Image 1: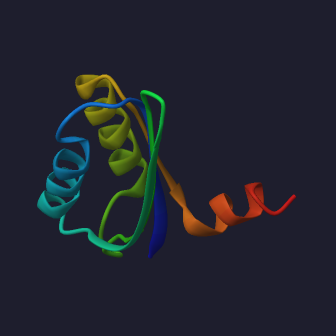
Image 2: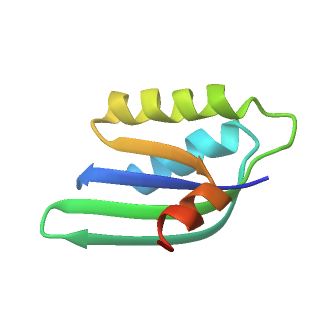
Image 3: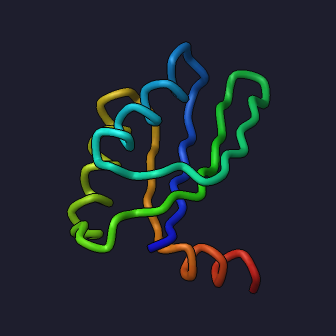
Length: 88
């Protein structure tokens, strides 16, 4: 299933490598990435493919916990919900 991961917070070394490694360990493929740094603020959006067998709610909680552990905000959403929120 397609999903979107957003990562925001203060820029630091290794954010992209860290989140990419975290997702790879979950057998999640990254299909597209957009990231920018505005001043000291880091923002990234990743389009990903989550295996159908994954517990999406648990994965969303794990993403949030991972983000908290690195001092960033990491959010996982179904792609349809993300699209609907940004097309209002």
